[in-house]
Every structure is written in structure tokens, then in C-alpha cells.
Amino acid sequence: MRTRAALLVALVLGCGVIAACGGGEGDEESEARVPEGCEQVEAPAPKDVELKKPSGLRPPPRAPVAVVETSCGSFEIGLEVAASPKTTASFAHLVEEGVYDRTAFHRIVPDFVIQGGDPLGDGTGGPGYFIDEPPPVDTEYTRGTVAMAKTEAEPPGRAGSQFFVVVAADAGLPADFALLGEVGAGFDTVERIAQAGDPASGQTGTPRAPVLIEEIALERG
Image 1 (spheres, helix red, strand yellow):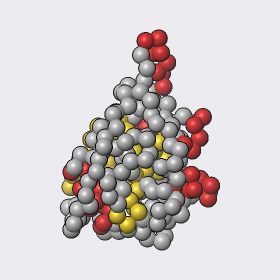
Image 2: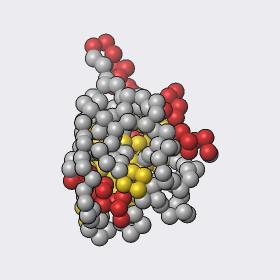
Image 3: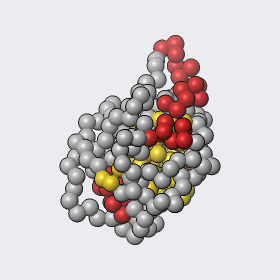
Image 4: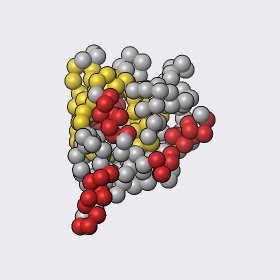
């Protein structure tokens, strides 16, 4: 469990870059890598995002839901505003700024997590600022939990823009990752995205085919 946790927190170190599907004679092979129910898409171009940390971040409206539209369908995240007011406020700000639109799930580890939210698409990017909000000490990262990703060297609760969704029954992670919310609908889409993971890539999680986040929108629950 601890080894798996260490591999997750080192997410900006050695993560593979998603390659776009090739053309010509490789079309059939590329299409075969796309999970059933997903669109075949090309990896998005890197986005250079450099936002200033806004002053006076306000939590989103009561019982907010983030609707994540992807090339494999949509899913909803019920945001944990009460437990994580700063984290959810920053996430809402990034959604409003369009940081997540046309980005990829750059790290997909079957039976563990899917990870996205990096504007550069290679696991090294962020929004240009960070916030710190350690999660409750009893936080568990179980199936459907959504939390913010960070490196092992960063303090508990540090968050930029990258987030992960737990696919496993229990990811076995320490309470170090800022809690964003819980998947409330569309977990079949999350599982479909997880099928794009390549078991041969191990914990680096390089996808077999690109999975696109088309946009994220906030709605009242």
C-alpha cells in the first residue's frame, strides 16, 4: 500500500506523455485501443496556463455539482464544500477560467485511479498557483473519491489543478490529498476511462489511447 501511495504522489515525476493516434496503416490498431463507448480523439495540444492566485476565493454555491464531459461520456462530482472550502473554491475558479477544457486524462492506472487536470498534458503542469488545505485525518480514498494530486515533496493538502478519481475499492493512500468530492453519477464513464489504461505501463499510467476532458461545468445540486 505504501509503495502504491508513493507512486501516486510522485505524479509529476516520470509520467508518460499521451501520444496522438497515428494515421495510415495504424488506424485500425489505434482505434482498437479506444474503449468501447469512447470517441477516438487526438491528444490535445498543451495549454500554457499561468494564473495569479485570486484573492478572496469564494466557495461555490450550496450543494454544487461539477459535470465533467469527456470523450467517453460524462460524470458528475458532488463537491465537498463544507469539508474543503478552499479546495472547492479554487477548483470552481479554474472551471470558470476554462483551465480544464480540452485537456486529457494523462494518467490512467487500471484498478487504481484516473488522473487529469494538467493543462500541459504530461503530469508536470498546473494553473500557476497553489493552495494548501490538508484533508480531515480520517479521510479515506475509496471508490469514487475525487481528490487533488500533488508530489511527495509537497505538504499535505497542496493543490494546483490536477485531480484524480479513485477506481479501486480502496486506493490505500494516506490522508495527504486535498479532498474535492465524490462521483455521484456516471461512474460507468469513469470505469470506461479506466479501460484506456495500459497495464504494461504500470504506475506511470500512460494511456493506450487519449481520453479528452471536453469541458467541466458547475451546476447546483
